[in-house]
Image 1 (cartoon, rainbow, N blue to C red):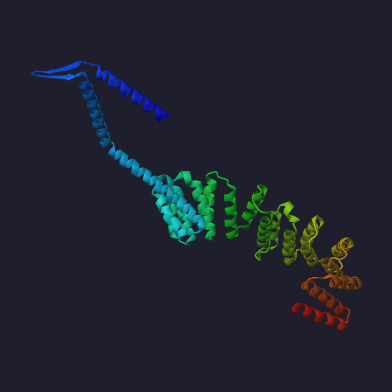
Image 2: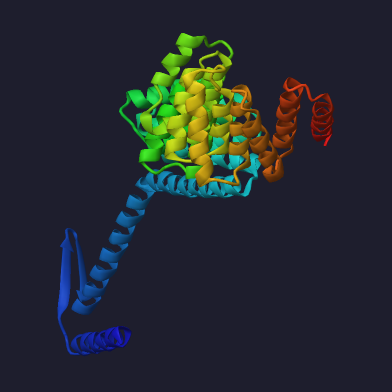
Length: 398
């Protein structure tokens, strides 16, 4: 529609100019002594318009010529930006596709554009790391070491790659630098936890697990497994004496002390050092909070000496538990073992035979036969003792 209006306007203007020129008898005289030029007004107007257009064309041509270097530079800049951005897209695509060689080459192209250099370096470092080229990886990261805008991204990348490369000490240095800048990222805490796990710094692993649990940043199964590994390492060390073991146990939070695998491991550690009273206390506290066969086994190993009031108290406690769990084989074995130590032969035999009938594990069958053999041997019943010893041996083989 607009084009049609323009055409109509041009046609009207052309008609108007033609009519005006047709009936315009005017002349123009130009004097330039000693010369004189006579021409019609119409011709003068045409020449004036043509001269203006020619001059305008010359000015535009001169201006375009003068601006040619800037235009060439702008064209090259646009081309460089297109190539750099395409290289960045190609690098990311190749990295996610697992084509790490292509990703690193594309990152090199992307890095030619200054705006992309930092992110391209991070991509190139990851690609080089996946190809097991630590020298190239470190070179990429060193290139952006002084770029404060990418400091957090660089340190997070360094931590992740060093943990993956099993260099926990270097990874923890990066974490320390990250923490010094006031950053407290959950993802950084997760990598710090993994680095401390590799470095076997178990107290720090436990501290980080508790922090991440509060923020719901760990799967419950993973949290439980990490706690188990940490306490296993802390409480299971052979280098602990009684005092060092007590100091470690004192640092365990109250809510963790009744967790079955922690309580069982701690009680076993105290038992191994002859600290049976403390082992019993730990097991009893845990069993009050929740029943677990591992804790029951540790409680059995913490049996008091013959004739002691604490041994009688253990038997009484187990009989109370037995009324609540009449088919618990582990409890029956424990109660039989305690009665055997107290030389309550009838009760010992009854509970041990009950454990045999309810046992599902070969280790429990083996231990029950062994206890029965020891009981019959103490009573001078050699034939019965030999029979249980044989069955104990068979259970060990099977």
